[in-house]
Length: 64
View 1: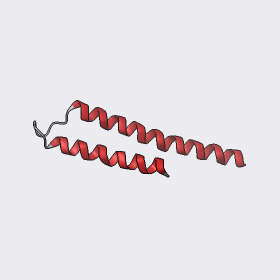
View 2: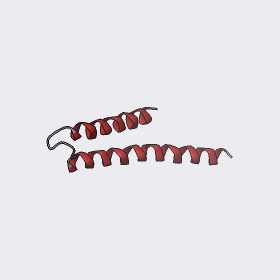
View 3: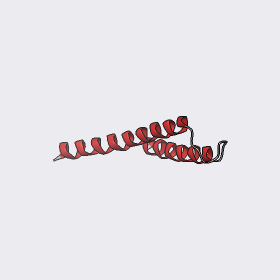
């Protein structure tokens, strides 16, 4: 449960940071560091959800 909450919160945080950076000078441009941060957040969230699904699948196969 804590994994899903942390992944969701980080996704929201990454989206907010990207949106805030649109309004900072120079307006309309997102800095590369913000994009890199958002990419790392997406990888983290994807790995959390992917590992969770993989473990559930392993448990389901073991119970058969």
